[in-house]
Image 1 (cartoon, rainbow, N blue to C red):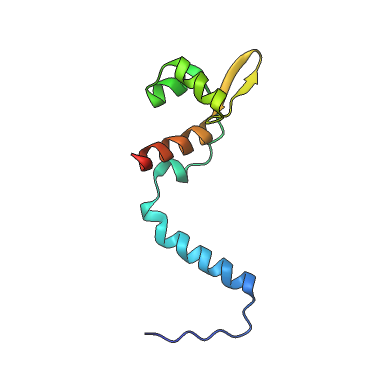
Image 2 (cartoon, rainbow, N blue to C red):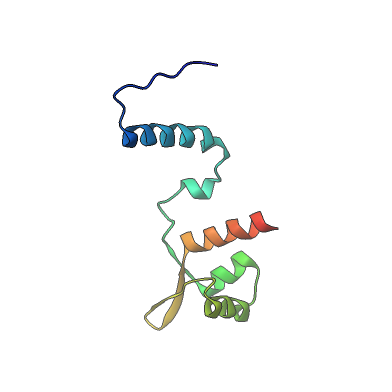
Length: 96
């Protein structure tokens, strides 16, 4: 085993170095949608969300009422953030 000698390294610097090393090691395993953040907060209409989950609009409304998804009202229409939808999709696929 290699020896590690730490001298004059602050706790915050050590945490930062470890975090960066872990991220570099995990990058090949991350899903593409997690790496693309430019469109992560795009808003999606109800129909698009239903298509993505393959559910009926009544199911989407029930999920919204149960607090599983957060909706945003703009101009009398209901929208959902793409980043929140992707997070839910990731949870759905990892729990199956």
